[in-house]
Image 1 (tube, helix red, strand yellow):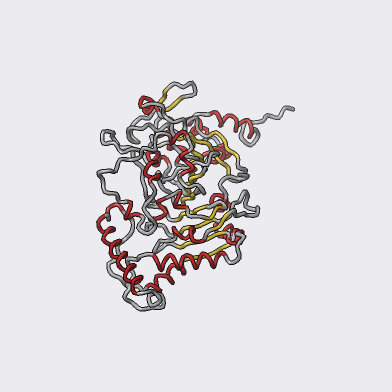
Image 2: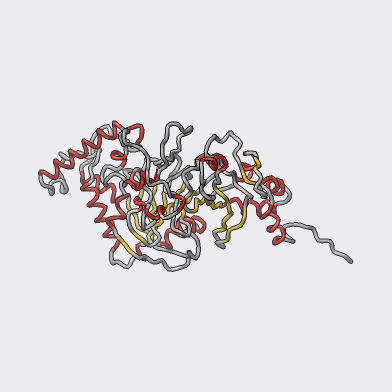
Length: 434
């Protein structure tokens, strides 16, 4: 008696996985309708995508077919990557999402797959990683329309420690992995050669003074890494500096190096009101069950980006810091920062224990700086996310108490239970084993 075995995914999962690894986007879309098992197998491949850069263009002629973000699927449970698309979609330097973009075929012939075939699968993507620095010739924002149900966007570091330092588009949760070296980490990458000349702003008033009024304006290094704004180019090669609307939670994973993450991501100095929570992950973790480690800790540097007037600040993993009462150090550092920072909604003429503890010169100086900041924000209002209060209603002590009330400390295990296993893996670990 012969028993017939169907060629189903349940019976031959390894063989089907090999087939799917080499299948075209169109084939994956069609195969997905065959059975529930195949549908689940394909959905797993597009659930979490890691986007990496192709080689940088060597000349202006290369821009027309410039390599863009290549995609691979990622499984957070196993840490394995799998081929997802032969190409996601090569992103040309010119044009819009309605244009046909150049795309390399398997034999390096130029083919033009329709956007519809891409969207059939990328609409199922919930998590996207930008892995390493992707050169400025590519308009990454133009693939945002492919990811219509994006939940998490992560900016992770490659093997050389480089990273994408801006948000090309948003998601409900954005996870950042700053470098201890800040933007200097990118400059060693060959992709960044030729950027040292920077953007020409000699005849243009800079709005950066208003963006970051209390720490000094961003370094020339940030300006130098932004692409040159040349009027004859259409559209101008520019990148966003802010946090897109729709981002509700920021996770800043310091990976054991507790410093100022804004040296890597300057937009952390300008938190819009739609961001409800900023999570700071302190320890380096290689697995959810592992023991976290911290190589260096500076509470003063950490609180530099805790300037939001509305967002909650959640600090994860103080128990891993080899400093007694580190949470108390963070509270004291945040209090000191708030006292010395000018605030638009504080009436410095109100006497309380903090203003009365200042000298007359200190009190007058901080009030003067707050007044100057208010004028700057009104002048640059179209470029900033900081709201301008209509009237000064708070005392300085009320301002300090409000910030401290929005500061919370939780252990790694508490955070893991709070957000669930998958979210914890995405927030707490860059990639397992690294």
